Length: 315
Ligand SMILES: *[C@@H]1O[C@H](CO)[C@@H](O)[C@H](O)[C@H]1NC(C)=O
Image 1 (cartoon, rainbow, N blue to C red):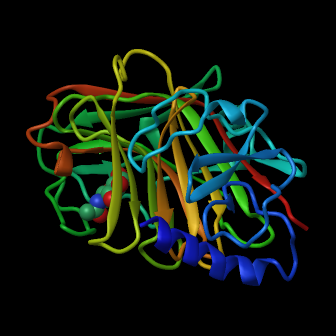
Image 2 (spheres, helix red, strand yellow; image 1 turned 180 degrees about the horizontal axis):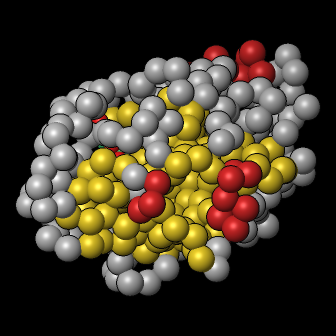
């Protein structure tokens, strides 16, 4: 496995080394057989993971985290910090200037893969907090126009960011995060996620609860090739928790996505083929579907605050 990683990284580095003698943030910077750059981009430090692999880890405390697996961090505190040239795309106060940063609904309309149809009046903002409310209907409102076309039993809320996210040579790193109170009862399906504007996949789920207290971090490379890191979050519905990704261009085609809850690293996925593919950022409260049915008979709320999108600008 490490052999494969090393040769893949080598290939990308031979292209990269034409322009840079340093490894990018999260790039390989050493290990047995490694002939590429051993110095790291500004703001990151070369940290040994094992004899075959060292990696450029951002942040001044980088040296404290040396062990990683693809599903779970074994130590806390692996927190990237902003890079030189980092710019804010969506600031923490964006909901207070809603129409500057956000649109109502999904980018494609009101319906998706669960039993909720989105309505503008199920979305409200107060004191910088976005609230999406799903209400059970007393009679069915037809069927969703989106696959798998479930019966509509709720009216709920969805919003999406006006700016799209694309990881490429110009914007090689993105940080996306927010604090959420997300329902976890059966039949509630809140999400904070990225999905391709021109194709599907790409998809990255930063927050997705499917009727349990487990958050599903998912990266869809194809409909059947998916990485998932499940994290149990206690009091997810009643306490603010921060959900975060750091996505970096790993080579000409692939993005590496790191996942965090409350600042603690939980895993990393290879978002193969995501470079140059623009994505929407969506916050929605879907119902039933993958989260089970029947869903709640009354109202359910899903809240967000301090949503932030930032990126590094290479030129
Ligand atoms: C359904 O939508 C959720 C986001 O609400 C997304 O994470 C999931 O991948 C979608 N599932 C399918 C099968 O389309």
